[in-house]
Image (cartoon, rainbow, N blue to C red):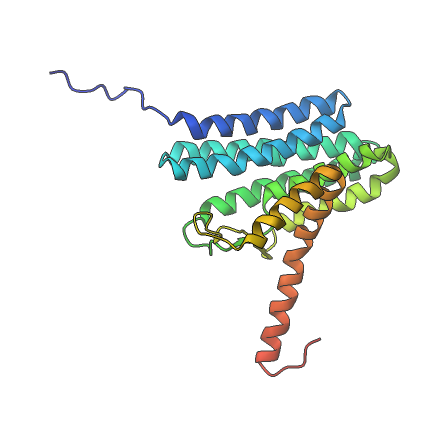
Length: 248
């Protein structure tokens, strides 16, 4: 019997990587649509990438098809969908008339996403699963995409809110590389029973989002983006109180 060739191909798991490929395609599609001036399509594509990115890892865990290849592929997909795509979308939509200030803000966001993903990958084994260190890149992308979607829905030109876009872009980029704690939700066990009111609240949430998707989604992610700062202030106040120092 011939020994297996050292160059024999190793298989990869198809199902979770299909979701990752879908997220990558959505990010690439957002870039193309932004270049064509179809900013609503670009923003929606980034939100679709978020959904697909949230599914690939869960599908891999449920089907026990995790792999090193899948983890690396997911990280590269995230960089395109939540790093490069939002930076180019917001630059094309609102920042391209600001000269160096515009593309520097977009680069701050892009490099923030890259550093955030690299740090996440290196600290995966030691990080508290309940909390993210720094704003997750999908949530940062949702801030950018949400602003573009809302402004397009309200018929507001990107040039009219370029300073708001500039500030939000820099805020999202710096928040990703901060040490602020953001709740991950990974301690929620979907296999356990929940009170009936929880199901009612979920249904109401879907109704609220469907009533005005751009505004509601943008407001939700603005709230989440600020939550890390509020949690840090709360913890800081508690530490000073425990140390017997008056809070400032």
